[in-house]
Length: 439
Image (cartoon, rainbow, N blue to C red; front, side, top):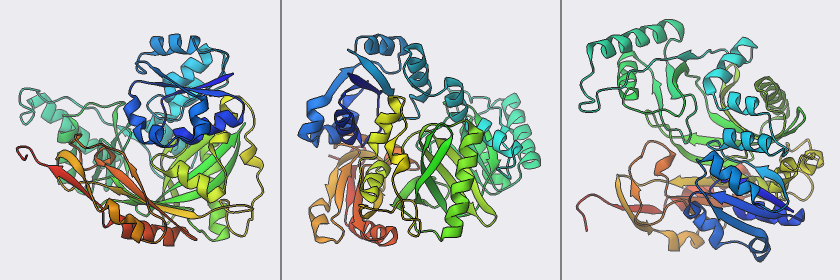
């Protein structure tokens, strides 16, 4: 019997393969670029190697994926752990008669504008979404916009000021990796953001929503048939504006019991309202002075090293729950005992907290390597290096996660201490980039 995966997150493939093998299944990865999994493939355990098959296919071609899946012997389930392939993955599972989410619900979650509007209508958000029309700039001279385009931008700015107010955020309704996101605090920034947005292609459409002030977190949850369990809360350190890239994170954050209970209730209501009833969810939110406000919902396990953080803190391979869900059965993780006095991520047989820091270069150019990796072992917390790029790769984007070249992870007894250790260790690592023209 086999479980297939339509692409996967950069990290976690090895644990997913082990989980599939533990359930008595093989894992077949469909990928358009196996180099994405370079680090994972180089560190597979013998148990993972024994059950993993890889099929090279254009994963943006749904017909090609359907044909590849039809050729998988005794296919029992389809894992879909990414945002980009969530809609085609749901469609393919439905067409093949495999367990899976309602494709309509997945389409809703991939539309941040629709989710914001729905939550606002149900009293779960103080802000609403406003679709912003965009007129592409002249590709021959993007700096010069036609008179109609300038008039349209002026009209859009006026409507944003009237309906949303400032500060606001402009973003792609189906964006990923924090790309195509513009926080705006005054009218000058608003007009500049609209002009820049006119030069970008969007996965969805441009919309505006209020900017909510406060620290950013993500609730890591697991659901089954509408029942949701909060596995823990991840802290998220964001870059100074106007960049919107993620800099660091730690798990699990220790909240006082009353506040933790409120978060558990809030995230459960948000997911039910948004139509997510089974599987992992990574729910990003701002903890404002008036309470939590949604940033976005990702119907998957968290990216970067969130899955690894969950496995270590909970003392178990949480990817087993992903396999359970793909097979259409209640995840055993939902019923695991919890020590309520310590928070949902703690209980019998739990492990360390983790912090991790994303390493970005300080300029654009070609990545040639890193300095400081050989000193990581001198730092406390058993720091580990997880590369996300390879020397020779061109680094173009510094304001979002596409510019990340690697991640430093460290452990400690608490998330706070783990983050301190990760920050200290990552401070010794530098991504070396050769600018154009340098040898």
